[in-house]
Image (cartoon, rainbow, N blue to C red; front, side):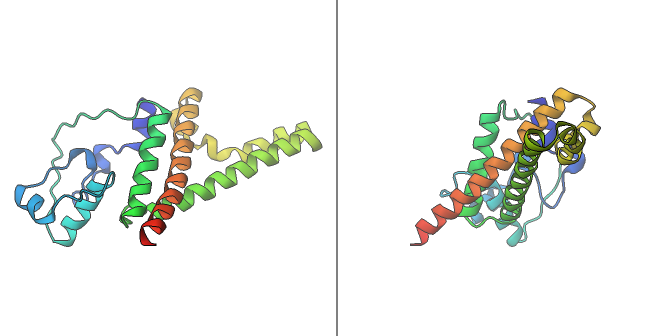
Length: 187
């Protein structure tokens, strides 16, 4: 949970007054009544609501002294399910404000590149030279250890990489599932 919080959720300095985060958002009754809750959204409703509020020129305010209690996803299964459903809902409901498609495509690209690097490392280790693989490993695995510089902890680095790859995989699957569902709804 600690690694999930550090990796995924923003700190108070990351919050923007013009685009509030989901965990601390409240609306006045007249805003709620004017915009109407999007019943068809099984996820992404907060992003949809904020987007519509901005389009209607409602103002946002940031309460920096507010106290928010929120429990992050407690395991990789929950992280995967949440990100998958969120991305799928964003795609199905045309909620692109958060850059859903761009993030999903970047995730697919990163996963593909890292898989190719890993396979290349195995190939070099198995068929060419074990020494060559050891020399090549830091260059091919550098993305995995970017987080280590910040945390200085191997276990945190491993956990954060597991979370990051779980999110990328979920985002990729959610993107494809959302496109398929959207195509079925259009036909």
